[in-house]
Image (cartoon, rainbow, N blue to C red):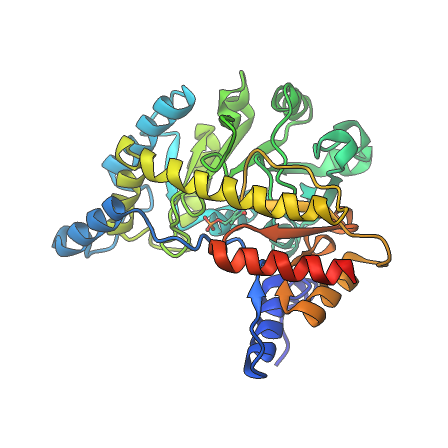
Length: 389
Ligand SMILES: *Cc1c(COP(=O)(O)O)cnc(C)c1O
């Protein structure tokens, strides 16, 4: 049995490898602490769980959902976008549910790319920005995100021949893995660029609700003209501790949403309606306090990690958003992977090598803040010892 040529082109999913290494160590009786995966450790807020419980009791949620989503789901997203971002959306044409941002982003590749087409992908970036285009027979072209440009791509550096074939662009702020926030003017630049080059912008909004120090991340759709050229994939996973629920919304350009819907009717049968009901509750004001207290926890953990790294001479920027610390690999290691391997072997702490998120992530490592405080403190102690050696 042979996997498809397309599938064979994809390197093994980073976290699958990490999980195997962790399992091996654990089987050998070693106390491994993983700071590798970004998966909130706290439970989903209780009002959201209660809304789900009630919705599950209601036989009205038990049948096939519509791919377009429940009216109250689409209205709930509209209300949230208005309240949170000041963005007006038409519930009939500019909103749809997705079964998580991951599937939504993958499916957008299927909806918009043909073999020979190009998708412009942030590098380092969420792996689906590159695996998605490859799996549909198109070509991902990497846009390096480097510290000297505040982790925004240099749009003028995209090769003209690739740009001519580009139909999609994936961007993501606040950014995974770099923890960067969007600098003033960048979204405006993207809108101009997309208009000039006839590209559909896909903004991955997985971390807009996870921010610190009073920073409020914007929606891409706040940018004038954004709705003409783009859509936003809003995930409830990280901001509401709902990674297991598979809840997202895709919002923005009506034509793109209609195309996405047409594709989806051929692939899946929509989001369980009880999950949609729970998502409405999550996006309501009733969950704001839970989100704020989660963010206090992450800010405290961020400081714990950044202080410890600074103490041992790792020059790390304190992120204003996301659940990640993106730090330069200490001197003496050829690659980020070599350093992460060393840390795993010496201290049984799992951290992610930057190169796993794309070539431009080389030289960095990522620490996720989704580990309970005492375990994180223990991991930081171990890291300190390893680096001090
Ligand atoms: C976690 C993450 C996702 C996946 O979100 P789901 O809604 O759980 O599929 C997508 N994009 C980025 C940048 C992420 O970090």
